[in-house]
Image 1 (tube, rainbow, N blue to C red):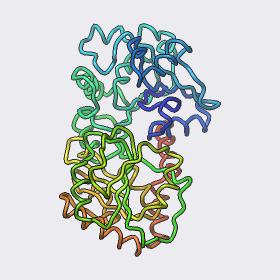
Image 2: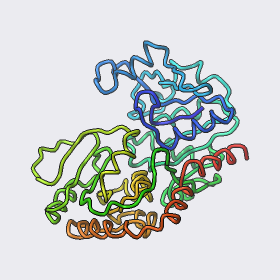
Image 3: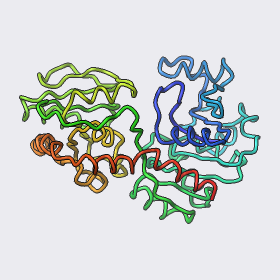
Image 4: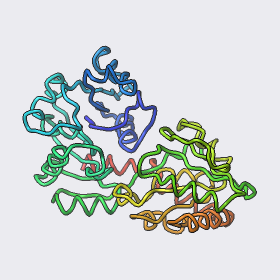
Length: 360
């Protein structure tokens, strides 16, 4: 059983834990993937209504593949707001059948579903530490319970996606701790010769509070002959800068083809808590796989993680120069070295390591 965070069915996206679930299912494991919890309040939310329908009206289970079933967990409470032991005690009251089964493996991620860890009977329990619990929008009780599990070695192994998170976990837990960064799906990407005549830069992804929009807008003023295009949900942009355009969300499947139209990919993150634990964002690999130059800020572990594959700047003038430098750098990519670097970081190379660890 996997306590995940992103739905195969409802989110139409895959993050690391989804790749792990698919890989284990493809290698003979019967995988129950719990993607999220739903309360009756979701019926009144436009964003979460589909979760309510799946959880409360359609049995809460849907087949993803032959050996992989996704579950949306029925809960009387909004799990990320749980704030007491009493509420925690009854959070699985509607899912006794799921909880009462015996599993060979439990894999949890950072998130409110970790509250189910001590309720589920599994021979081995693992934690994939993909984010800091302090930057995940969960209650103080959730965080304290999460660290209680780590401190009491509830997990036989902890898999940290960054050195920052590995250092955090080793300070709390004496469980075996492994550094296993995120991978990249290279399907659909073909490294090609750089088209160095396109003065076009791109950022794609969710526009959360750790994306520095002001940096993007001010940088554009230093590069009036460049076009900067933005893709992703949740951006309120009124088009006030002539050479910055917003195109809304884009599907994962269309990203390889989309990137062919650009010469530089942007990583304009803010200097905030979340970025401290980020080494190599997924979009970094995708930019490189499409043969784009990469312009990034250097906060947290970004510069250590991406190294010389990116150019760096933290203020608008520096970031503009990083874009110009990245535009030139991509002309000099050693294609064999680039392909080797990407293949080393691909899920095809990383996923077998998870299987070895769970069978250790």
